[in-house]
Image (cartoon, rainbow, N blue to C red; front, side, top):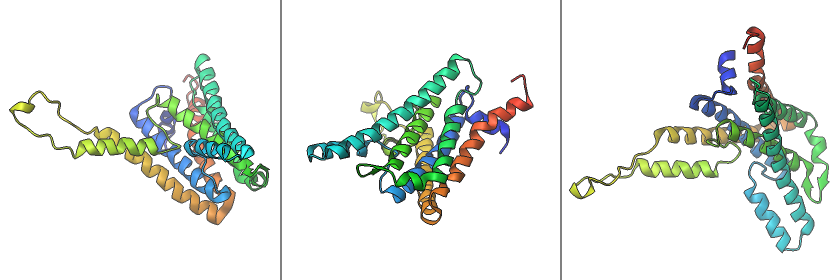
Amino acid sequence: MPVNYLTNLTANTRTQRANLHLGVALAFVAGALNAGGFLAIGQYTSHMTGVVSSAADDLVLGKTAHAIAGLIALGAFIVGAMTTALMVNYAKRTESSVTYTAPLLLEAVLLLVFGFIGATIQTREFVSVSMTAFFLCYVMGLQNALVTKISNAEIRTTHITGLVTDLGIELGRLVYWNRSGAELENVPVVRANRRKLRVHASLIAAFAGGAVSGALGFKHAGYIATVPLAALLVIVSVAPLFKRVAHPRL
């Protein structure tokens, strides 16, 4: 891909097209990690709804240690989001032209580490929860916060519940029958936002495609299946650096 296109994906000046394309790429990564991670450890890590619910159930059932493990997973997700916020805000304060590169590159490095030593991490547990779960929760928090900040909270990539809801709302508007008549002249016409339809459908499809790819990758190749995902993130994150080398004044 051209360097200029890749650079625009993480540029400080945002466009709806750049937000969508970056969102699609990261949704694919999140889907792959979530589905592949489940095959590895039997637990989903991209969304915290189930984690909090499980922790509440364990607490009520007297499984205090399991509840604490769930809260640690939640904490890992939060710390991941905090890490992105720190990196992005520091870059903005220093007026960096590569504000969003550091979190993407960090995620890529973590995925590379996970790909090569994930099997070792899996053998280590807290109570009955693999350390891999905490690791993936951190990565998911890091990524979700990044795309939230880069798109001004317009796009999410690590979970699709909200996307599916918004898609359903827009589809309802799309098929709505706007009746005509004198008594309805002042009634607002219901129209679907077709741009939102495309955005939500694209992100959902990317997450689903990533999930299938991740499941197949983990099934047949194991943890090393994360290396192509890391490579994708590296390509996107370092593109601005190549542009600066080619054009030092930028």
